[in-house]
Length: 80
Image (tube, rainbow, N blue to C red; front, side, top):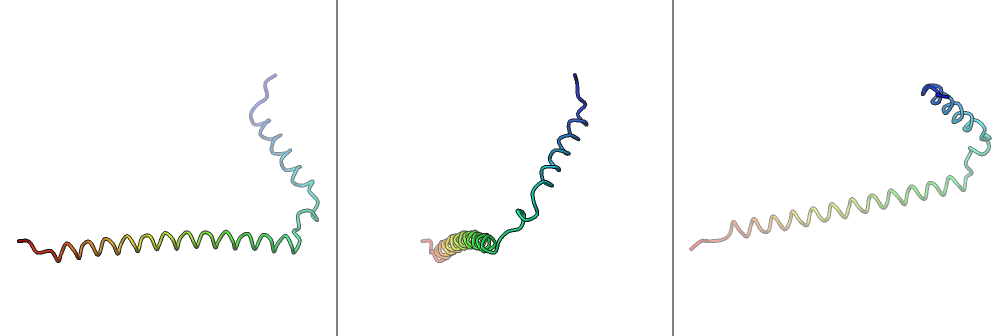
């Protein structure tokens, strides 16, 4: 027996939607402690991202300074 693709997609959609509606509203709410935990986790993640960006910036500045020193050294050379 062949099922048309639209029928299969429709049934899948109905099953997925009925599953999300069956979760009680109380279970969807987060507690204060859970909110604080998520907030700490998000802050920690953002701090890590900021630290990584700062490290990348320091590395770029160091590379730029090295290139500048090299250019100055080359410009100050005298050829005999």
